Figure 1 (cartoon, rainbow, N blue to C red):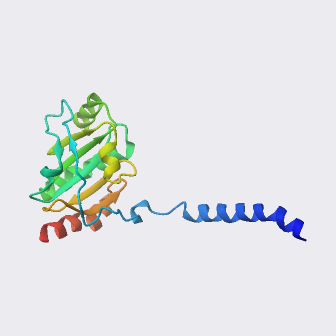
Figure 2 (cartoon, one colour):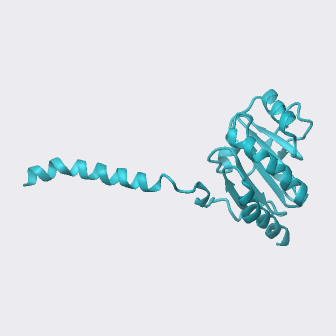
Figure 3 (cartoon, one colour):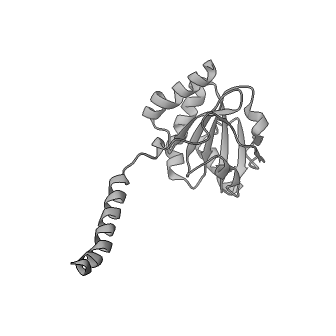
Length: 179
């Protein structure tokens, strides 16, 4: 009997592990709360993406007024899908919108923005992904709302959709402006 249990134990553990993975496959990544929420933005400095006609930005430029920071890349298909909504966000709220261009060649970022439009007030190049790591970015696109004190108050993982814009992002901006 002990011998059978020893043979079956690895099989039972494997089945249990597979069950845990299967049950969590469809989990919404936006449910993962960022450890940076309600904390000051990390110290960083990003040079401008050459050719965009926009300045780079750093921790100090986040203070003073509410800012939305969007992490994007030209090679990111969901970034293309969300881009028109960033233009809507900018038009509807007038909020400062900063872009963090992740692991991208400058000429590709310029072509992306020339094709789709450039809603960003500033665009910083995060070529080595270091700043994105400090911000706790899982992948592109991701969007943060930073209040006037430079504190991150909201994080959206994945592309902004019309529903998430209305239900999450716009209320987060309004709340940040009210505080």
